[in-house]
Structure formats: C-alpha cells, structure tokens
Image (cartoon, rainbow, N blue to C red; front, side, top):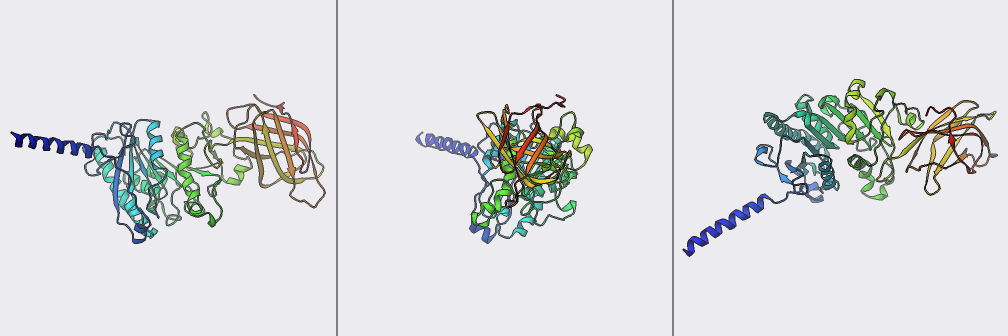
Length: 453
C-alpha cells in the first residue's frame, strides 16, 4: 500500500513538473562577444507572444506550429525579425516592441530569434544566413496557409538584415503576404543589388521602408511602395557625431528607426510624411502640398500608414521626408513660412523664429542654407518646432547674414506668413516689419488678410 501511494505520488509530481516546464517562459538567445569572435552556426527559434502570454514567450516549432494551443490562426500574425548582432546581446527594444504591438490589437507576435547565426564578426557569413532564415519562415507560413490562414493578415517587421529576410520570405509567396515594414534596411552587401537579391515592392501587398542611417549601415535608395527618410535619412538628432562616443556612434542612427516606429504604435503624436524629391526641397517648404492624397492628406508615418495603401499603389514608389526631435515624443510641429520683402537690394541671410504663448516657447534656427530675399518675391522655408505652442501670442524673429565684419543689414518685410501644417489652424501674418541684423524683433501675429479660413 505504501509503495502504491509512493508510486502515484511520484507520478503526480512528475506530471506537475512537466506542466510547469510547459509554462516556462522562453527568452531570446543571449550571447556575447566571445561567440561573435568564434562565430555561430545558424539556429532559428520562434517565440510566440499573444495577449494571453504577453510577457511570456512560448516556443513555436516551424515544423509543428499547431502543437502550441496559443497559436490562433484566426488572428493576424506579426513577425518581428532582428538584424546583425555583432556583440551577441538581445536587442534592447525587443520586450517593449512586443508589448506595444499586442496593445495595438489582438494578434500573434512571432519573434524570430536567429541570434545564433546573426552573431558573428564575419558580416558576410551573416548575410549568407539571411536566405536560410527566410527558408525557415517560408516553411512555417506554408503550413499556416495550408491550415487556412489568410496571407494578407501577415505583417513582417524586419530590422536591418531582417528587412531583407522579410523580402526573401515574401518573394516565396509572390507578394501575397499582407505587409512588410523595413526598419533601416541593411545597406552593406545590398546597395546596388538587383530586386531579386534584396527587399523590393513586389515582396508584399504593401511594403514600407524607413531610412535613418543611409550613409553607413542602412540602404540608400527606395525599396518599397513608400520610403520614409527621417531627418534626411542619415544623421539623426541626438546621435553622436564622433567615434569618441563609443558604440553609440555606430548604432544610434541605425537603431533610431526602431524607436521611431515604436513611437507610432502609441499614436499620441503622429508624424506626417511629405512626398518630395529631395530633403533640400522639403526643408525649403516646397513639398507641403498633399492634394494628391485627398481626402486623407499626406500619409502618417508608422503603423497606421496602411490606410494610404491604395493611393500609394496607384502613385508607384513614393519618397517622403519628415523631421523629428532627438527623443520621444519625436513628432515636430511645422509651419510653412512665406516672406515678401521690399528692400531695393537683394539680401541673403538666415532666420531664427521663436513662438510664445506667454508660458511656453519653441524656437528653430533656419540655417540649412542662406535664404534669398528679393524685392516683392516670396521666399519660403519650412520651420519645424520641437513642441506645439498654442495659442501663438508672440513671434520673435532674428535675421543674420553670417558676415560679422560688414555693416549690419536691415530687412524690410512687406509680409510674413506662418501657415500651420497640422490641425488645420488659421495662418498667422504680420505686415510692414523692419528686422535689424542680429537683433530680436518681437510682434503679435494677426490673422492673414488673404486667409481662406
């Protein structure tokens, strides 16, 4: 009797132990620089997160995915794919990204952990592994489709090399996958390649790419139906400019793409993306017309950009630009500034504009190039402020030529007009104003006489 009781007790303990093991949380593979130096062989792990297990990853087999009862094919599925990991550590943004995705809607979030294979000092070996990772994902998605999953409900978010993995996977299904989001897609070994050897617009029903480090680790040219060039696509505000800043010098611009996209999931401060042929034209205020996107206006960058999918498919590949702050909230508040002067002679110079509501201030220096102020000819420029100051009670202008040893100039304004780019607010004007070089001139703006509002 005692032996029988002991036997069933052991069975019970074993079953409870197995049940506990089944509920253990899986985390992304954590390696170090030693693994990078010796090199790692590719091993792909798929970690499933749902709203039921939002903070507890569960292993998902690409061979037998439906053995996991939490994998629900009636829900949309989002694949989150990291890139090159030279130090072997998991991405710092991973946990928060998963959380934000699950907060946005019910879905399967599948983290593609290919850290073993991405951790290698030999970057070219890692590039070779991207095709193998894509083959693994293709196998899983084929099984999903066989079980009735809608490929249009699949969203692949790829960071750096992960962007091209997404493209290779999507190409296997001839672009029937719903959406690919490329976050600063990798440039080295992909720049200049033909479409079959990189991400391209035919890889999914909707392909978008964000560029933040195109002069170093990122891809330079357009890759999707819509390409966003944040702050011109290269140097990001707040990122170090010298190598003496350590590892942040190499990864800050590249990694900013992830944090910008994550910020769009909160939807607290949307960023408008303006179609334009170049960043210079964008800064000059030449690309503020969003009429071709009527009635919705210019696309909003980020997770909700799919709303503009049909219009973008009609327009073909669209290059867009926007500016951001150096940290969250990243959104800026823009004004198109139009100035008409009545000096006899043409002047060249720079403007600083400060807005105030009596309690808060926001200031911007328009110094990307010297502006030409010609008599009775309207000069335009884009002014992007780091915060929204409302209502604007005072505007302060400062004009300078940058030529300190010459006699100070005076700029006579026939009119200055500030047109808000967000929230359909009324344009503000001031008429007949004199600016003395290097001296602040403060005035109260008034509604523009020719306003259509």
